[in-house]
Length: 79
Image 1 (tube, rainbow, N blue to C red):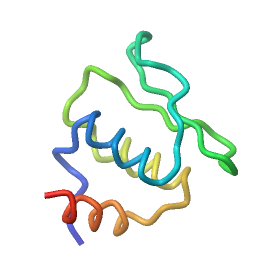
Image 2: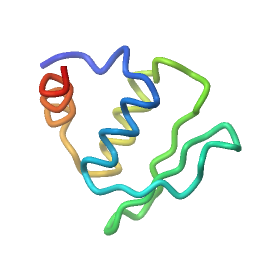
Image 3: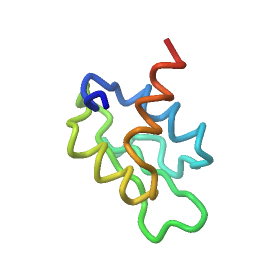
């Protein structure tokens, strides 16, 4: 499985939209904040750090209950 590196905030935002997440904060605070029905926590990452650190992506995928493999496959299809 590929590493989750070199993913920009914009690319990760596109992935979140594709899995049904809704953005609840526009990033004016320096962070993007997303919600998904059924998730107990928000998905949060900084707007000004690109690429997003791998541990931030991993933690957010764990919050969503999505395996890393699903994001890797989505990235492959996107190219």
